[in-house]
Length: 136
Ligand code: TYD
Image (cartoon, rainbow, N blue to C red; front, side, top):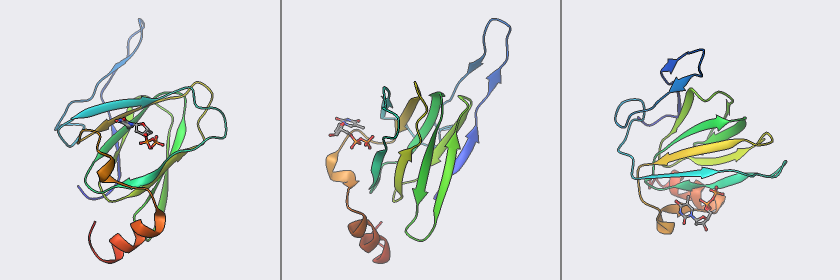
C-alpha cells in the first residue's frame, strides 16, 4: 500500500457499550512494532509536522476528533478522524501533520518500526528534495 487510506474497523454495537478492534496484518496493514498516543493537547496546537523514511503508521481518534494532513510532495489531503472505528493508514514517505484537536481528544498511533530519530525527516524542503530525487 503506498497511498493513505481510511480503514473502517469492525464494530460490535451493544447496549452495554460498543467494541471495536484492529488486527495486525489485517485491518492494520503491517506488523506493529510500536504504539504511542497523543493526549492533553491544548486547543490550537499542531503535532507531527514531519515525514518518516520507512515507518508506516495507523492512526485512530480513540476519543474526540482531529485532522491529519497528508502531503505526498504534490498534493495535500486532509482526513478528519472523529469516530473510534475508523483508522487512517499513512504509508512511509509522506509529510504529515495533525491539527484541529478537539478538547480531550486522544490519538492512538501504531507504527511499523521502533522509535528511531534517524527515520524522521523534520524539514519540509529536505522532504521535497528527497521526494524529487526518488529517495523516499
Ligand atoms: P515526535 O514524533 O516529534 O512528536 P509529534 O510527531 O507528535 O509532534 O515526538 C516527540 C518526542 O517524543 C521526540 O523528541 C521523541 C519522543 N518519542 C519517543 O521517544 N518515542 C516515540 O515512539 C515517539 C513517537 C516519540
